[in-house]
Amino acid sequence: MEIRDAGLNPLHGAETARDVSGIFHPESIALIGIPRGLKPGKVFFLGLLDQGYEGPIYLVHPQAGTIDGYPAYRSVLDVPGPVALAIVMSPRDTVRNALEECGIKKVKYVILYTSGFSELGDEEGQKAEERMRGLARSGGFRILGPNCMGIYSPASKMAPFPFMPKTPGEIALLSQSGSIVNLFLKACAEKRLFFRHAVSYGNSCDIDLPELLSTVMAMDEVGLVGCYCEGTDPRRLGAVLKENAGSKPLIMWKVGQTHAGMRAASSHTGSITGSSDLWKSLFRQHGVIEVSNIEEMLDTTMIFSFLEPKGQGRVVIMSGPGGPAVSAADAVIANGLRMAALESSTESRLRTLLPSTGTSIRNPVDVGLGAAFDLNLYFDAIDCIAGDPQVDCIIIVGGGATDDLNEQYVNGLIERQGAGGKHLIAIDFPGFIGNKQVLDPLYENRVPVYPTPERAIRSYARLMAFQRFREARPRPKP
Image (cartoon, rainbow, N blue to C red):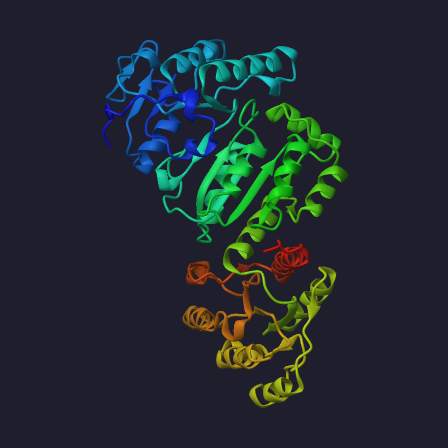
């Protein structure tokens, strides 16, 4: 990538910066206060280089003439071309001057990485953020942050860290925590879940969660939105939730709902969190899918990414080992779903397909331990159940006895994905499939895989709850 003057027309921030969506595809970027050595702020530059950002990148340092062989400018005012986005990582006491210069330069957006403001819990930090808002208004630009990592947008070849996935997807993530963005995206990539945009917004002194959420919910290229939120204005957020209720799945991980969590949120991003009952009521009213940890966030993201909400939540548990099926049946009921009642013709057909001993033709369907050697016992049973109109979802616990058989097992599940219009979910039960790489084709073909039936059922129940919420919503008049 060449760092150069792109010869763009001047940008008039005061006229165009009101639309937050522009921050996801800036035509040029300035890194203000970029360190000379390998220090935390350098990751922004490395992330842009790694993604192959195609616009001009201007390095700004008050003393350096070059950084890592690239030219550097003493001030953003010395940059020869227009700057659409400035990422500011200057020391706290220099931030005000940097923002004033951004206004003079007609910068449209500022990502403020620098910390040490309202998250410290003192009055001066809050006043400093108020002054930042004033500078943004008078200068015609918008601020994301402070105390944030900013934007990940692979379609625009932007990332705040190197080695982040380069494949654009249909998921958007909004997070007050920058580390959550980095860790969650990497965990999702292992399951072939990719993102259109991810935002670390930190203290949100200007651009905040409600505005970001309204923006990504309106994007046609985004089909699913996830949020990690420590605190925000519930009235403003509620207005956005009401406007977008049921339009697309919204997964919310709201932290800071205990006294200990409230204190931690305040010191992390300066957030005022609010009561747990308030948030739960708000989410329930507007069909938000609430999760409570990163495991649930990952599980729920996968089910909504891979499966369409449909059906009545009638589940068949199919298993080779018997014990997990019993536990799974308990989980179905505990999560508000129904164990499907198989039609008599389906049970009769299963009776002819399965061995007469060591199996069960009733739901949960036990195909027997012999299925680990004869995979057709799994496949024939799936084909039979897929034709039953009383079934919406088949959750299968199993696998082959060898790596070769596991590959055949995975391919057989892929071939049967969506058969009969049924949801198919695979369980990689602990100790069953040793080589986890054999599961990769399932993710690639959008078959959800969970390590336990309980996690799969909890996620599927959330999919069905969202379906019921949408069906209960009054339809707009033609």
